Image (tube, rainbow over all chains, first blue to last red; front, side):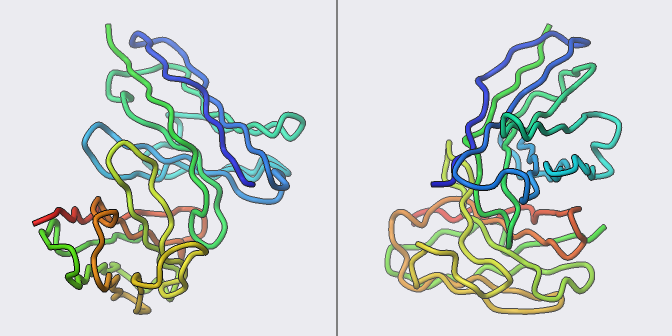
Length: 116
Length: 108
């Protein structure tokens, strides 16, 4: 059974850094693109970017280029989303997803709250 | 970037009704268009991929049509569990996906 398990909710102050994770199981982690989707409170879905775990080739949506960093570790079947400097506008739910024909599996989401 | 619009923005319907949601792309996406349902407090789930293919486990009352720039999702015989927000999403622009703004379906 394919499963994407995400790390727990986080609360940070503006300017702090953060790494959230997504552990995949039930399939060959290296051979499917993993993507990240942001959902601001009460809003729609935004595509952030994607990474191919086999070679760590990462592609970013223009709106998120330079704002976040994607990484993947095949030894632990884990993808990560990293912020070097958080802003209050980063407060949102973040989903990791598996990309196939469409997005066929979604993690449950990680809530990130950035507030002073 | 490919932009997606959806109509209507929201609608109210009754159990048993048939509803259709439209998604339009700013340029052709061929059939690289997919549909999702998000229920409150949950992650979205894939309903239809490649414009018209039913995802495994999704009831046959869901159907999708279209190609190029115009697409529809039809739900025939609404059930209580079908209410939520529907999103279309394109994958024609390889790995730079975009989502539509969503269509909220409420119980009348």
